[in-house]
Image 1: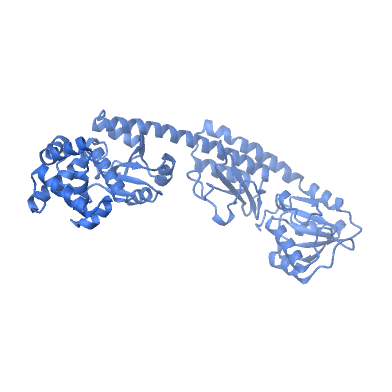
Image 2 (image 1 turned 180 degrees about the vertical axis):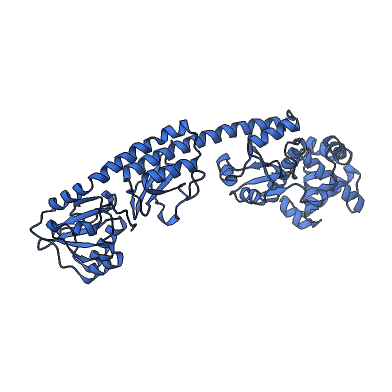
Length: 490
């Protein structure tokens, strides 16, 4: 449990009141715990209704009978942040086992005996009277936290500065996280994963503070965890709830800003793909949208992955995104972690261009990325980088030259395939990709090896090329790669 400031009521001060005649039975190490209220409860598990720092008073009906159950009862109360357990003497309390006292000592949870002559209301009145000043302090803190809404508009504070102010006012150290434990707002630290709730429906009290959901349209955006700061005066649950509301406003503003930047980024990428921006204007736009100008970029074509999955994979890396039917174009820094994150998306098919200078034309990188995505779909690889195949470096970049190469070498057979619905080019490509192993290529094509052998002979007759000739083989392979680049074959 956190230590508290001198002007806070503690268990030690409570037992020092002569009229109450309280006696410590166990847990003396926890006498410095702060007290926020005193309440009677005869429930075996009152923790869902507790906020922390309460003195729980019982006539004994709440105390279970077995040793294991009594130990669990003490542990539940301590986990909920209870300040002390006060048990009325000589009423309905069952015999207290050694396990009960041992748990109280281990946890440092004070167990107090209340004389039969002292009514519980007397304890509640003493606590209430002692906390009047604290109540005024809490009200003042609430009013000042409301002032945070004015700071947002009048002082233009960054998120980190805003939450530092809220911490000073509230007496809590504040953490924020997404439901999975990641950062929720920039500049605000994430809590230890062990204290992050597993549900948005659980009670807010945790040992030493509170954990609350941060509301957002469509469901909670994450959690706010607030721990009492040593030497501070914690202002209570109501103030923490107000801080969660401020966090929700910040999340909404951040989402709005990101969505505006995402739309602007899509428009910029569309104009760059259509070659509508000169390099200077494009570089200014990229800089405003957060992309680094000192590092090369990659243009990627992503398929079989939703926009949300790609956004999660990219994380905080600056990027531009544009959806065109089944293709999602992404312009992002040339970083290994970007490529790895995209390749890790389940079922993804993606291709990346060669590295390009920020602001440069995208016509050639677009063809490269499309080709690489097609290659990924054929190979089963999640991500293919253009140029990984050394044969590609010998191909010219001019699409007109590529098309001329294809027509010169493959024109007759491409037209034959189109007219007769045959697959001669695809069969030759499969045979070449399997290192001229007839049986393996035939198995891939789901045809008999004799059928594939016939197709190879027919291809040679139509093209006038000898597939056993090294020179003809190389020319045909380059022509097939060129045809893939310009989209004449799949």
